[in-house]
Length: 275
Ligand code: FE2
Image 1: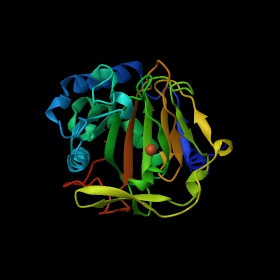
Image 2: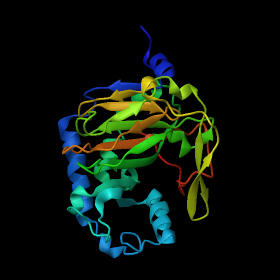
Image 3: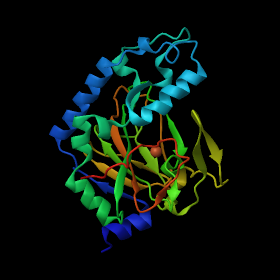
């Protein structure tokens, strides 16, 4: 019987069904709704309007590294730039320092159980660099194309590990995760590099993304934790169903590796771990 670490090294991911209980799920879901309710897009006309200004959009995104900010689904607006649905059903995600700035999310993100998993898969000094609440809204939940999370969290050596929590059942119908088992043994294809006040994708390697035959859909129940390697290719389809697919993610880098100064997320003080 392979150990957790052996399975992780072989497959590049691990599933933990029933990892989060219903009370913890409902606490973060409720808190996310409060954050969305308090969000006033009209305060940011140069970002959320028809005459979006690239500089303002970039600045809003880059500053979210150390803040709690809402982002809309791409298809939430009509041709005139008006929201086509209520705000609560139009938000794509909240990011990217929920774990650090919001007490409800911090309690969810820093637990002994997560620290144990991190140790079991070989992370020596797990440090949480980023958190996201993803809504994958009914009808308009956007596709997230094939990528590797190490693209956004480069380090030497690469240690970024994603902790992905299903807050609702995820199915083929509402845009569950797809991943390529064992694909973490392939190269890093792209790097998202910061250039002053913005960041851009750089192509590193021409290895193609997996086709349907080499990828598997992760249909998981609410409460499931998926842990996956930063080099593991993954994807999620658009959500055209009437059901949302809420999830929460943490990106963790080992403090024993050298975090790149060119990553878009930088912090003034060293990020903390799970405890
Ligand atoms: Fe990802």
